[in-house]
Length: 121
Image (cartoon, rainbow, N blue to C red; front, side, top):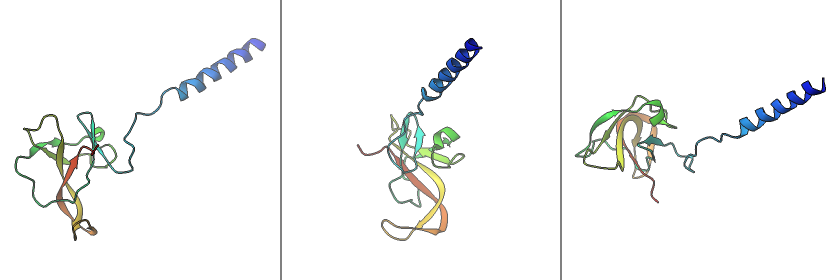
């Protein structure tokens, strides 16, 4: 009986250690939504634009892992193929309408291009 209790206590201790041993992957220290592409986190600090800038081309669709904290899985994105490594890209997404230099009206949604870039260091 003593041996069974000892074995049970040892198993519980190992289980507790196993749960605490694997911390979640490190994420950037920011509350802003981010996209994870090519090993980097990208943010959208600028206002959406109506036209895709010259030189940017269709690059694919964001999968769940790339969409990360944005809810944008399935969204088309556009890159500048001359850019290596990737510094920025655009998504075509439903977003609020710009009504000022730094204000969007979230009640008037439309399809626009959103600029995603690496954080300023």
